[in-house]
Image: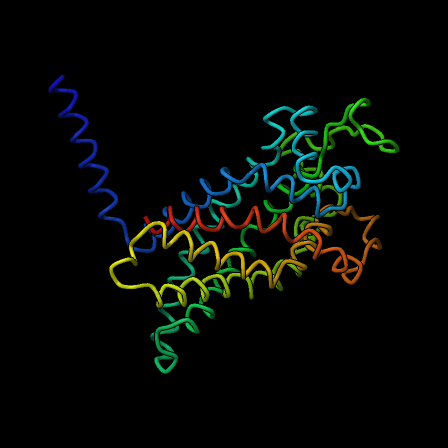
Length: 299
């Protein structure tokens, strides 16, 4: 028993030494990736429902939120709520890692290059915006694949809404999805919808960091390390950032689901007219996701 405990202690010390010897940016990379992976998995069912609503699948709009959960549970089982989550985690780990690492790096560069800006919410707004754009460009193809996989629905003739034919799965997995999209439209196809993503991520990422850091300045010093306070500040920050940029998120999802011959479909203006009625569902997903990610990262 003593030998096993000694080996365990040595393992912990070795791990601590390994982590302690890492450069700061590597620690930020690992912390951001792990935080993002845990957060995305925790809210995967809500993310799946959100994508189905955003891509205008009429059968889900008519069922509503609770009815949609029930339908997926009956037709696809528990695993149905996690359809596409593998691609989501595969993407969010490098995305979150790059996002938080780039945020800290951009913040340092701005402080060194433009000392007149000073430390504060404006600095966080600028650094957060550029960090978000950087992370999106590097990981966008995985986001597209995640949307395509989540968009697929396994129907049954008994549970399908009248007028809707049971659907077959087009993509069997991440690799198959990548392969088919690339064969259909090349690299351009893998970056379909990236423009609204960038238009949205710059203000969203910037506002999220801005609101979060601004709210923290009003927290008493003895409560700043309180997990509950961080949860509240982060949730409100994510909710406010999402509210301002949600229409572009819907445009992005709809463009991601279009194939080459469908690109003359719904316009950006048509899409935006449908956004407000779906915003509440997206807020329910973003509220816990944003905070779980930030809390795990800061821990």
